Length: 181
Image (cartoon, rainbow, N blue to C red; front, side, top):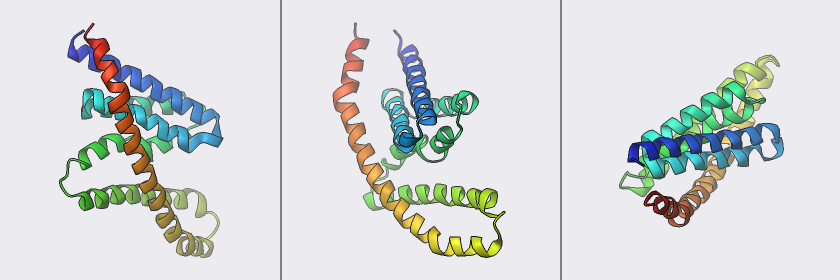
């Protein structure tokens, strides 16, 4: 099997597994965040096996299929806004030499996504309540959401790094051995 065919086949497999994870997340709301974060592991696997372009293709295909066919749009939206692009963004960011700069960029990326979601939610849901209530909710809860979300994101990034290490050291080498046959 040629390298190009292998990359395309693996990308299609990872996209299918990603959509399956998003489907389970959309019908099982108790594990939504965890399952959507789990779906991003397939994007990471695509980046590891085929490079950034493969990871982007898995993200784009999974996002489109998820939005088109899944019964609940919350899981694919969560994937699009927070988790789906992070594996290839993480790969690019971690090529930067300075660790502190890496963390600053990662937190800025997460916080930018959080601000965008907050603004959209505020415009869509909270604007109907009234400006006084919206201002008090913004003033009280927004800083708490940003701080708490940043802490959760740091834990997620640490765990995600460990899972990527596990994939590289335990799974990826077996996939390459199967290619030699």
